[in-house]
Length: 156
Image (cartoon, rainbow, N blue to C red; front, side, top):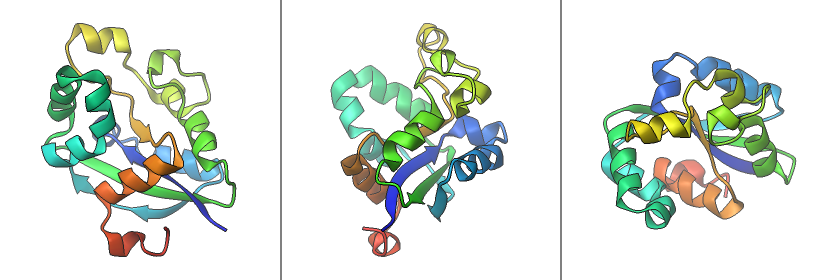
């Protein structure tokens, strides 16, 4: 049986030319790329993707997310593994949300250059390279934002 995790390379990863390196690291971690797209983020897609965070963190988060993503290129992916703990394993490889706190050997720890302190002082989203869903439910919901139902039919 294949289990899935949704990840998205954010605009800073694309802009810095890190997409291939990050995908290599994910593959070396034992994950296969089952679906991959290149999308231009819109305010509507970002609102749908970050709906829970917008509710949790409020209008400042929504404004910062829109400023960071709207009109920018992102690479949404569905990763696969035979391991039922794929979500936890991918999130461990990705590293702490705040790149400054991410451990060496993780994607954010090795490649991240931003921090929550810096981004908050500059009133913007933290550039932390990659999003990884935090639960099986989020995998399905977030994948549905970025991929059409026919594309996901074989996965869910």
